[in-house]
Length: 578
Image (tube, rainbow, N blue to C red):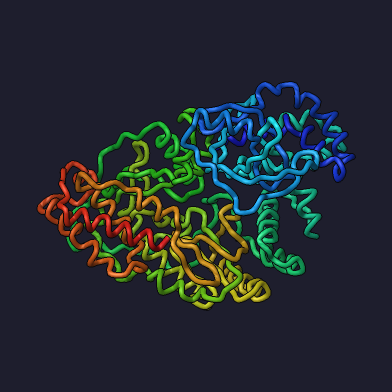
């Protein structure tokens, strides 16, 4: 992803002059500035082409004044020779509009294409398939503003940054430090437009960006001042977890071992280079902050299990190309606690999402909030710290904060959060471990609720992440569901992924499919009856064996006709909920 952003930045520089020409009337003065600063932008036109459906290369023209992508018929004809199965969809009514240089166009059909823009910095793939409207004239594919933004190109931001940089006679900085220019844009433009104080730190810049995004989602401008006051009232925001912050002001987690249980001490484990690097970096951070301590005399020791986050799996980089910040951002530390079998679990249960989300009907103001390294914000009772020791790169470490992976951790965090936010719970707030949803009838009430919410966060010593916060919206994705004032609907991407699972050939695959359907069971009629033949098949296959996926994946199975019908029926029911 970072490579794509670098490519997008290079592309922005090369096409700035052409875009300035398109917006000549409204950006006349800025165009002269860009022309002086980026005169070389058109010198490498041979690199400015787009690969279409991995079959054809053609020239493209970026047009930030266009709302749709346009493909000339001449390029489409060449593409159809290479891709004869490409579907050309005819429009019921012709689409009319203005293209490059305010020239009118008319389109009677469109095609959906995969686009990869080639730049001097490398290929930049546009996410998803883009709908391109067919026109008779032209020899270049017209790339719209929306498509450019999908690959990280914001021309308004580029132009403003260029103008401000030129005013300061700092042209060399334009070429060398694009991230700094983006920050300066936020400082000088976003806050001025909203009437907010000028951000002085990176954290204040992140908070200003949250407010801007809220306004983009329709938050009323006359309430921005009150919203900013609520955001900055308390010291509750952190760009990343800071171990030097004291733990939350709550009752600590106390683990209850079984009577006469023997301590467990693991052996060392090998980790891949990225995992080892993460454990070294994060371990040093926690050790320096006093969150963990060396304890080679501990009788207890469990192995660690570093887990890469979903967004980290999409990082198209070799292991040695990751920065330290990326390693810390895209990995989380969990523990493979063998002491779970020696612990008396605490009573409790997670709330039913289908029940708690019913409180959202008619709510037109929503926001989601995230706690960085949530478990690490909670204190661990001194009497339980030794039992939760773990092996970190050959050293035994004992924590004084709650560890993810212990049998009591998730329920403890959930129940503690519910107690802390009790005045708002199920009235204006829902919580699912570290994912917090705040809601209200309208923006005016929402700001009042936020003030009360931030007061509770500060009272209990929690910290929130501005980069993972959606401050205001009318529809939000929360815990795999889309929530709005009209109700709850399932995530279509998850349903599509579920329906794409092929028939299982081993018990591990069948176990994975059955577990994947459970998050839909509350919205699928007769889920249990439909999946029962598959459950019986899995029970037979795992009889007398471990239920771990590693073991189950080695057990081959053959579905009967009845089981195949049940498999197809479950997928059909799931697709009906999309």
